[in-house]
Image (cartoon, rainbow, N blue to C red; front, side):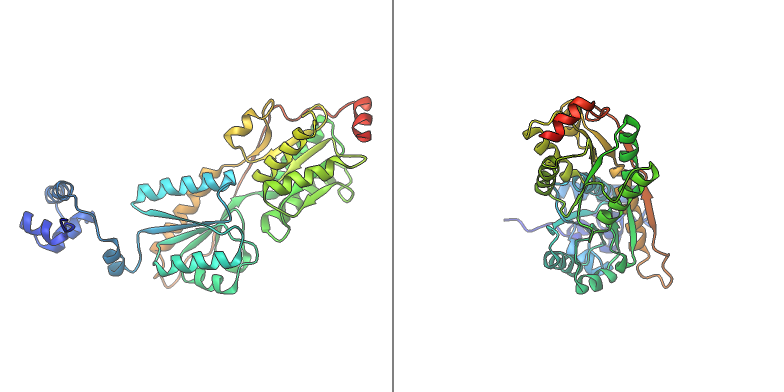
Length: 350
């Protein structure tokens, strides 16, 4: 087997210094255009592949960016990962995906591995119950938080206006005439879970509704929790006429449960989803949902991360950024006016 082509081989072939070849391949402006073109042409002809480990040792970091997420089944997280991947490709970086399943030990393992690999930076969706050691490692690596926020890290955060998202859903249902509105959300131990529930309750009060007695199922992020939460709601003697969900996978599970139990959406129950996966446009007559500017959020986070990476040796870094992007309500066929007295009585008896 032929050995890999090295910088010295290119330099000998072109009768140039090794340092000149290296600078030309790195895009240095100190090397003339004609020489740079010759070097790139020869590198392509010979099939030269840069030794990233050696490059990392020279500059102290590798051309790697870590994306650490609780899961990639969540459409929001998957879309964000794709956007970050495209951003890395444009910058000549390689993306490393790590899934924690919201397990603190797994999160520590992935962050430690990325730290050891001298990554350029990390895009992090923090898990629940982050370990202290994980926080210490992150403090030594340029990183940004996405969607969820662990305030103890004191680092840059990019996400959505969670309370505003819930206000949009509630206001839409109230506008249609609903007065009994329920909620399905994630764990209150997460920043997003707490803020979205607070936003839901505040919105009810703003519209003169009783927030304290409103049905609110909270506790998980998975579709299975959404399914179980909807099942409990449907068993209530006086169940809501409209539901607002606060997570993409929660929406999927709750919607499936309602359809499995023969609930007509929106005739029996109006349903407001969360996020806007392509498939949601084809659920029944389409899902009314809270749309999120995922790609804009991920792009802004990556711009900040790479700027932080460039500043990592700066004596006076900038203050952490806290950027909220506004959600939008996408109206489709899963919401309508609440059922009339006869239909409502039938639903209550069910």
